[in-house]
Amino acid sequence: MRAQAQRPASRLATTLALGLMSAMILVAMSQESSADARAIGGHKRAVLTADAHRQSGPRDWPAYLYSNQHPSFAAADTGIKVGNVGHLVRKWHFRGDPATQAGQPDPGFLASPTVSAGAIYIGSNTGWFYKLNESTGAVRAKRFLGFQTDPHCSTKGIIATATVATDPNDGQQTVYVAAPGGFLYALSASDLSVKWRSVISTSAGFFDWSSPTVINGRIFVGVSSNCDAPLVPGGLVSFNQVTGPGLRRSTSCRQGLVAAPSGRPRRPVRPGISMSLLATQHRMA
Image (tube, rainbow, N blue to C red; front, side, top):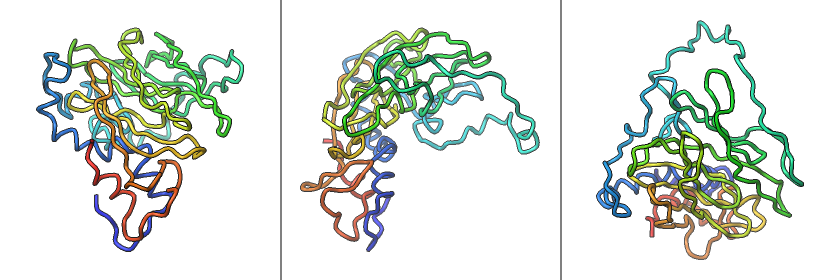
């Protein structure tokens, strides 16, 4: 990714470079430390490559934009074509649990569904996280992960798309999801029981917009402000996939700048340096 000379950063550039795609922008950095990742936490594990995160089923979609490389394309899924798309019909419908707590958002889905091994995993705006039967829509398991209130922003539930990947320690399918309140969860794919929970950020004004990216034994999550009141420095946090503690943290702004993925820099970015350059030139500290 290169800086675009003589083009000042726009709000759109800021959003793309520092926001929901933060994990994708800097994911290549984890490959430089793959040798270190093989022994994370002292656990015996196999090296996980990009292909290892992809499920064997042609209809699986185990992460945001399909895989940790974010191609948004599943080449093996050829069931829907130009010739039959006009004949698609609804097979089932799922709305989710209604709001039962004061201030809780109404049911609805802003996260994308994750599909793996015959199940669909998705978080609701109410704060419930579901495992559904892919064929019938029936609830196999659910867990309440909460919703986030803010005096300056709208109340939100789960917005980030979950990632399903193999736990390198026990070999079990695990669901990784960023939830309201600043926490990253590792849930057992079988029953959504909590394997671990780790803090992404406790900064005032932070919200978990970013979908986790899993690669080489690490999980990368972007840091962002809720609605820019206050601004939160955009950045990236990496976690140990097996045990959960945050390993490294990096901000995407030069010293003296305070920028947030969903908003504007507090001071203007110097002309000729795009926010995408700021996001890539700082390695994980």
